[in-house]
Image (cartoon, rainbow over the protein chains, first blue to last red):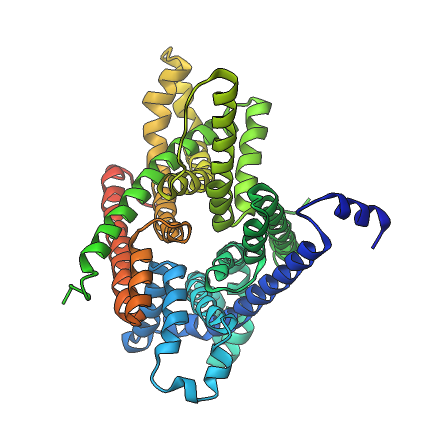
Length: 239
Length: 234
C-alpha cells in the first residue's frame, strides 16, 4: 500500500485497515449476490416471458400469477418467508439441501432470483408484445420455424427494446440487495452496520458505504449506456 | 381463523401504521417532487444544479442505507443541536428521532426524487401553446402555473405517480428494520416466537397484495376520470 494511504489510515479512528478489509468483504458479497441473482433471473425470465405471451390461459396464467405475486409484495417479505421458511420444512435438516441453505447467502440468493425474474419476465413480455408484426411475417415468409424465428428475429429485436427498462431493474436489484444484511449476511450494508455499531459513527460508516453504492450504480449506468449505443446503432439519426 | 395465535389484531394495527406511513411519505414526496420539478424547469442555473444533485444522489444510494443514515445520523445531529442550544442559549429542547418519522423522511426524500422526474416530464408534456395562450390573456406566471399548467400536468403525471406509489408502498416494509412496529415487524416477532413463519408472513404478504391491487384499480379509475374528453392515441 502506498505510504500516504497507510498514514491516513493510521490517523483515522474509523477507517483503519481492518474496517477497510471488512468493507471489501462486504463489497465482494454484494457484487456476487447481485450478479448471480441477475444472471440466473435473466436466464429464467426469457422462457417465462415467452410462456407469458402464449394465448392459452392455462400456460400464461400460472406465469402471470407468479409475476403478480412477486411484484405485488415487498422483497423483504419474500426474503423472510424463504429465509425463515426453509428451516421449517419437515426433514430438510437431514438432507444435503440443508448444507446449502443453512448459509444465509443461498436463501437470500433464491429470494432475489425469484424477485428479479418476476420483474424481468414482465419487462421482456412487454418487449415481445411490441414486436412489429411485419418482422414476424417476414420471418414466416422466409420459411423459418417457430424456434428459428424466435431465436433469430423476435428475441434479438425484443432485447433491444427491453434494454432501457432492464438497466433500471439492475440498479433496483443492486439497491434492493442492501436488505440481505437483515438476515445476517455481511454485504456492503452489513459491513457498514457492523462498523457503525462498533464505533457509533453513523456518518462515517453509512456515508462511506453510500459512496461505494453510488460508484457501483454509476458504473452500471455507464456500461448500459455503452450497450445501448452498440445495440441501437441502427436507430441513430443520420448526420 | 384470523386470530393467528392472538397476533391477528396487532398485525392489523401494523397494517394501519403501514398505510399511514405510506400516505404521509407520499405527501412529502409529492411536495418535494413539485419543488424539484419547478427548480429543474425554472431556468435558474443554481436551482437546476441543486435539483439535479438531489435526484442523482438519491438514484445512487440504496433506500435502506439512506434510512439507516437518517435514523442513526439524524439522532446524533439532533443530540448535538440540543446540547448546543442548552449550553449556549440555555434552551432546553430535545427531539426523539423515532422510526416512524425517520421512515417518512427517508421514503419521502427518496420518492421526492422520482416524483421530480415524473413531474418534470409531465410539465414538459403540456403543449407550449397553452402557456402562450395564458400569456396572451395577460395571466401572470403564477396564474399560468395554477390555472393552466398544473391541472393539465396532473393528467400526464398520473401514470408515473401511480407507479411510484406502488413502489413506495412496498418500500415501507423496510421501516420495520429500524424498529417500527408495522405489520412486517409484528409478523417477524410472531413467527420467531411461534416458529411458524408461513403462518404470519403469508397473511402480511396478502395484505400487501391487496393494497397494491386496490391501488391499481383506484389509479385506473382516477385515470379514466381525468382523461374524460381526451381522445385516445392523441
